[in-house]
Length: 111
Image (cartoon, rainbow, N blue to C red; front, top):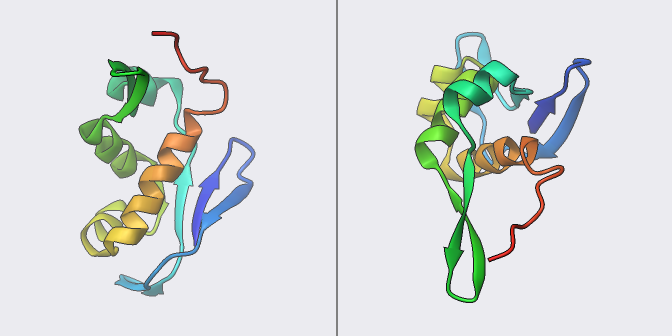
C-alpha cells in the first residue's frame, strides 16, 4: 500500500503496492510518505512545472525534484531500501503520491 501521512499523522491510502520487498525487519508491503514541509519545498522546488505547449499548457515532471522528494518523504520503509528494491509500478505510484501533495489548489495557467 502507498500511503500519505499528513500533519496529524493520519495516513491516506494512495494505492496498493505491486510487490513486497525485503527490508531490515522482514517483508515490506507498505510505503508511507510524510507530507512535505515548506523547507522541503524551498530546497527542492516544485515536482512539476507548467510549460507552454501546442494548444495550451502542459504539466511536465521535474524528475530530479521528484526523486529528491521521494528520498526525503518516504518514512516507511527506509528510503534507500524502498528506492533500490521497489518495482517500477510502485515507484510510479510513489511519484504520483508525491505530486498529489502539490496539486490540491493548483489551477491550470492560461497560455
